[in-house]
Image (tube, rainbow, N blue to C red):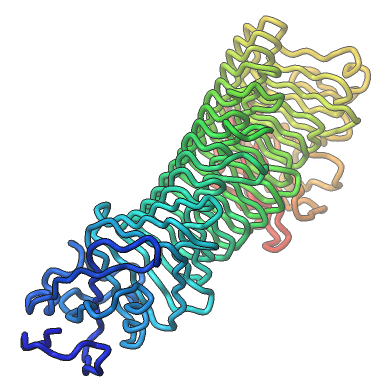
Length: 585
């Protein structure tokens, strides 16, 4: 070994005095039988000892700065250490550092566990560093839950045994970056760590899996993973945790779901592409699946196409979610009864600004207390072929959507039990093969106002015989009828909404006097109400002052003479506020 002066010194095992962190260079091929890396017979010269050629190009301070230092601080080689565990032990004894794997094909025949209590980085030179894992019992590379922060980056890992995880990290806060994994049972399994810019191909079950708080999976590609043997497989799978971020990934041609999550809170899934998934899933694969109890879920700006079942599905056990800005195109390639663009069954959800086309239904809603607003649902085909379908969905607001060119209805309100109170306002339903808006079966107390339905083959707005009997309180913008879910609010300089039965309060403004809308007298978390402000004058109406309990998304603009504006709020008891969730004119 060479010291800092370039002179030959004692090997590390011989008690050399080391002043700086070590960079262990392991070279050449290893034997498959022993599971140990064999080191090259070439020693590092003074230039290498000074760290000028040992580290991969571009090595610098990383996001986990505790695990990286400058490459000119590394000077120790490991030519006297014939196995990775031996080199790792020596490195941890020095206080941590980088275990560097240069280009070459490395063969390992046994699990390697990293359990040191000092930070260590296992760093290759890029795709030219290839680790072939031929035999093992649990995980090819494993970091124990009691270890210090570890980093794996810049190498390829091929795992032959289908029952062994490729990389398994039980310690939160670690990093896996620029690693290409092929094979194994699970490609990369982490607890509360970051997986970034990795590729996983051909894992038997999940491609990337996480099960703890503060996990991040970003900019990864997962293909050809999942055998479909269970329904909760995912190319990217979140088994639980708080504050999880899944973003900018691509999941394609996997046997199971693209992204699967369960038992999560405060999770954001954004800007992912999920396509052609689910070929091996018996019940169909989805682009994004919420498979179990979750709350505070955001599914934003994702693209899902040509999955064998639905693009996005949210079950009844999920509360407080936002599905916004997604594209769901040409899903249900497996011809399932479901296979919708977006299917929701949870509570207190907002589905807004999505584009859904070529699916079974554009949006299917099977529970109440939802807001479906500002979506475009067109050219949907299949068993239902509906733009937006409500089934047993009381107190749900459908406003400001465009439903056109669907093979059946634009909007279909249906159910198998008496349910009341959906509000259908300000939608545009044109050129559908079925009906523009269809009210059927046991739907009742429907509020149907200010919609545009034109050129629909089956009729523009229709009610079945059964619904016509039960929907005694059906309200349209022209009927002038009133019922339990409509509350005319007397126009005056001070207006207060009393009572909790109604969901739509109408204010007919007849002059230019300014007036105040006070906070409703009955408020509880999750309650949704819609104000209809009707300018029943020949000119400008007076200024509206909203009580401080109302939180508007933007300043309220009065409707023009003869016009109407609908503004919907939901109450949150924690803040004692009515928050605006939609507005349409």
